[in-house]
Image (cartoon, rainbow, N blue to C red; front, side, top):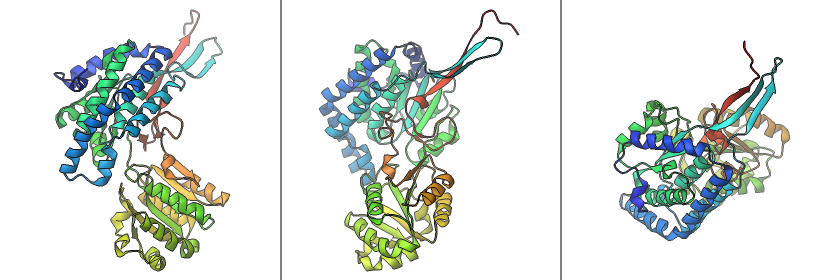
Length: 429
């Protein structure tokens, strides 16, 4: 199948959504074996044609460079053979997970003999609007397929060639395994396409935006289709008075530098005043050596002076720095006088994604966990573990920062709804 046929060429969003709805009826009845066979076929196709995907991606990356796109965004956009293989592995992991469709969530028998069961069912048609990262295309398609949902995928124009190549391979794999190609559709077009998708209420059952704050806010504000809000990651790492400082340094460096362009990377470092004298110079030097610029408040700067790092690696923080998702080798930093001050800072600035405490005090850790409101709270672990794959979900369709239905990494169960099945024997009321 030609790559551009992966997109709904000649179809309006409405027509594509109607085709997805028809495909969803068959997919909802597909056995686990049939869906898993399709997932394995998708993975095989990605591996067999990895060079084609990387070649298509190279066109997107070059165009992004020519347009002056930031290094962080280039990293999110870029595919390598290893990253394509990771996409295939994610699909295979999904195939190895239990099928959520048909799972009995709860059940009981009423005093009059009615048997009640609440069972998981597919949502139907899921729309995705996302920026950069073309690996999301495979992850979203795989999760939707395994959970019995057809999907409409609207990636950014910056990844158009990459997404077209990936979707074409996935659709071919569906056909080869006897499922409708329209279970997975890519949507091209301009911003009017996005608006039409956001307003396809009655044809699209759920919309998931994944990207920067501007995209997410636009979808949440303008969509008439129900939306699960995935949020930006203004992630904090708090180093407590009772922290193991070697462990704290390893966690901070991993959370900030292992892949700074993603939403679970650390963006703010908070250090308890009791350990700031020992920890701040060491971590400032380590961060500077890793190429990180520290945007520090006065208290942090005073203690960091002895680190003697280059001037461009330690700069004064502005108030806006503590609300910034950098997605780059930058981090805001502050010294706090107490655990409660750290919690207050996080409450004022958190985006509700992931928050981290490093402490050997169970009391401090428990207080932090109980009082910090976020989709994920880490104790003595890097924020980089807030990830569907790391949680054992196979992949994720996004990380939800809202509190309705799904919160945190969204895997298979989060892409289902439920219905009640009531069995009687001629019961009347």
